[in-house]
Length: 254
Image (spheres, helix red, strand yellow):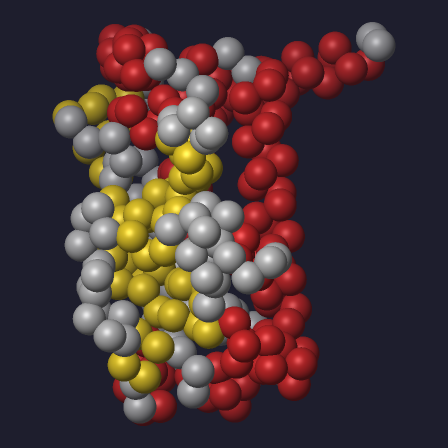
């Protein structure tokens, strides 16, 4: 487990919140300077987590939201049969731990994929701030709404699309998320394994490996271990948009 967290001095926190390059993605987005100072007072910074360390486990008493500053996390749950089901991946600027706000325990587990630095926001103090800061309350609702929208999109992805379309949609989603962080839209590393990708998309690892090889052969991308370059992002988009168009046409004939 990481060393005990320390509450930073406000002056130090301002570096990580007010001047953070991820502030437009995280809770400080849209807050005034004075409101950010109030948020600064409750933020705790954990020492870096190492790969395979847990931020929290399903069933743990929930205490905080966690904002990722660097690195990547995997959220998963364990079925009654002991199988792991990947629920999603958390990148810098995103929050994890929302499911712990329901009944006092986390419903899922969050594990580190790449060395990660996180900011901890205790629930109790965050709730108090949301009462007094309307901007923070709106931003938290926006985050929750986005989480719901992502879950709905995932259900559509698994229920309607072919294996090729699932992988294409996943890669485009990563591209969009990296772009919003000021990074390349076409060249990035995959922090998750092929097995994790397959688990998340409802595909066998062999299928994922075959699809990466097929996409590379079709000159849609190049891949070197976990480094991916999207060579023809327009064709990947067309693949996904074609699926959406088919869905709409099918619905119109019902």
